[in-house]
Image (cartoon, rainbow, N blue to C red; front, side, top):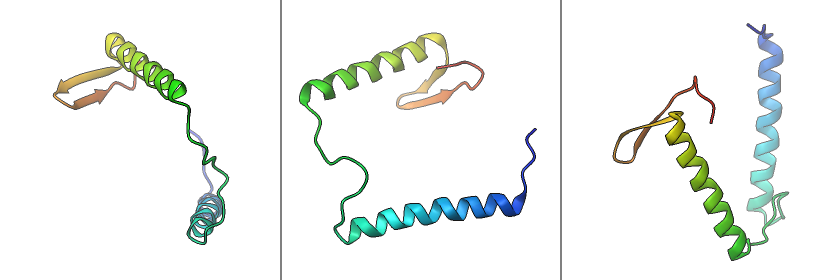
Length: 81
């Protein structure tokens, strides 16, 4: 098990939190974010949907995701996606 120094861990969390807070504040003020605002092409959206669907089906078939009931699934952490 990895040893963690509590004070270093908290400082790291605060640093990450402040970066996120700064990005959110710049968005409020109307500054552009680091993320792209360019919309995707319809073909790219369709291909990404198909890839996601195929990945989901493969996970269901392998047992990495188990369907419990309608719209309820369980992730099996012992199996890889």
